[in-house]
Image (tube, rainbow, N blue to C red; front, side, top):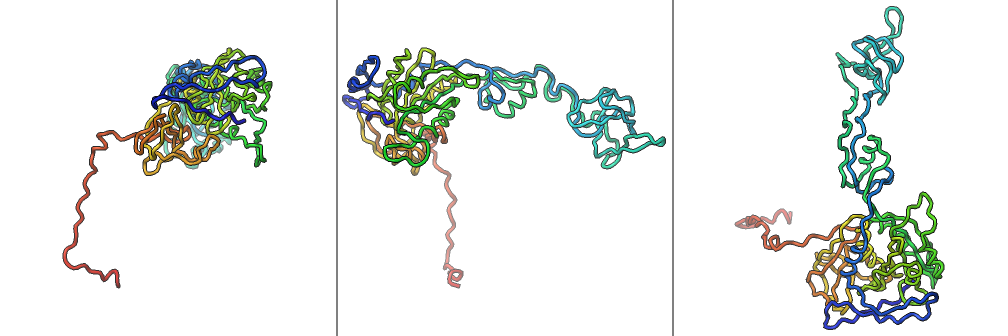
Length: 470
């Protein structure tokens, strides 16, 4: 679905003021009266801050070990008992008591002096055992009476095995109550293995928002080359991945058509299966304009929700909407054009997900602008850019419905309404999938002169060219 064209905002004197929308009330939209009162758009920076401030961090909760990779540990993990909690063999071979040869005993029984019993790596050391003889260091033979015994042989070294050799003692890795993993770390697979060794099935981690995607548009196809009048789905392949890069958890994904009933059903939570966690955020695509087929605001009103952000003085992405439902879910309405949708997601989606996930408001840096950008009174422009000789050059193919410019970009410039001069520092932010912006040089660094190169010695006298002409 494609939203209504973005409309500019008037700004007197070129100052960055909140601008009045000139949207006429919809007369074609059916259903309950949802009055469209002209209102002031939020400034770009104001919208970011509001999206961050409107939410509260999701409380910590236990999750299964298999789901804990990448999560932030909320509570210290201590050893519930000694690690390992029993003495075990470090080798395949025999547990022995004293010197050999050894009389063979039944596995698991207490060993008297000069007795041995078979054991495998990780096996419980039987009572009375003093060491483990490696399988390659022993041979089974018979004594003078023809009884089976174990004797040194093969690759055995003199004095093998000494007391304690090849035994992993209880508590070698950690004692009961010892701190294993400190809270605040981002859990990696090795942490999970350590927690499993400690007998943990779950870990308490900081909350992280579960995001459901509601993709709309009857004209959207999900495979192949679209026919005229149809468009290829650009949101399905990318939105879930971007949500995860921004700190969310990819939840369910639902595709609906353009009818109001489909919209309403898609936004309703409905019955949840045990394997489907409830959504903290719902992201919709399209439907944020003002035409009779744009149902976002009407559906939010019917569900008892409230609009937190209704339009941002930015381009592309002006028809952005953020709402909150009575059940606590946030609904982020992205425009139907793919680049405009990404700019809205970066502008207010990233702060919202950061706040819910105990993060900070994403920082905005600066880059030197590689072009002169004219003023656009009343609106902030977001332009994908690439670094060319150290300057941020606006990308080509950066229309609201294009993705080519963003796909090859190094970041996004935030162009203020008064424009930017060539070489001037302009606010910018990195892409979630790209490297951070380079740090600007300090005046001290700029003032530093590079070390002088040693002067080259110029040979005196006539030059011998024979090597070139021979």
